[in-house]
Length: 258
Image (cartoon, rainbow, N blue to C red; front, side, top):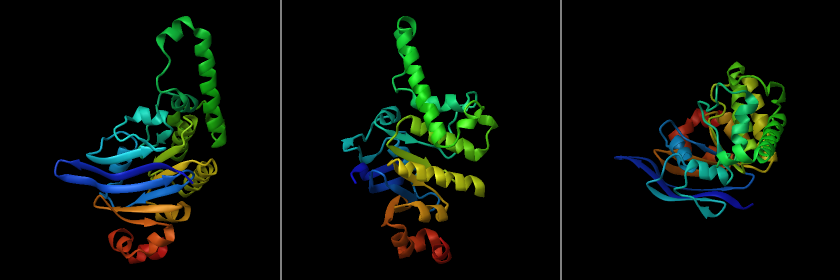
């Protein structure tokens, strides 16, 4: 499998605090790659760096082999990278379908001249966006709620709407920020099915998650951060047995039950 997302010596300092320190990663196409670590380990900062929301202090980021170290978020989306957020970033005044269509919209948006002088072109574009959004909703089993307001939906379903938006954007790499946080057992089962669909599509998925049962069962490889540094990387079995991970994060009892 080819490498689709790579970092070399990625570093982010906020004043005298180094939140991410010389982290190098390589994520392959179709791979489920998890990043774990205790609170304050630098996981969220790393995700912000990868998604173009925060510029790095040092180091490099490559997407499909191209250097994108300081590319903004909208440019990365155009290159096939999408992200979800732990606290959700849905538009509460829009329906489910309209929210997902925002993911399908071209990054440059419709130009005013097209709206005024080329209505046919604009309408064809909007039909194509709607078709992509509806296909993403159907794939994730959300077709029945496409016209509902997102505020009417359970929290777990809203998480799936965010992921559907990434699919509608035709993403090839998806960054998921603690998608299981706050979910009940039934919603967690639904989330795992959604994650399996992403893998079946051949997408590369980078997952930040505190649910160790989910991480260990679902991930192909895991990287472990502690105080901003990568202290371990490998398969779930390798990470579970790593004494540095046990000491820094899992703990003896946690490793036994993960």
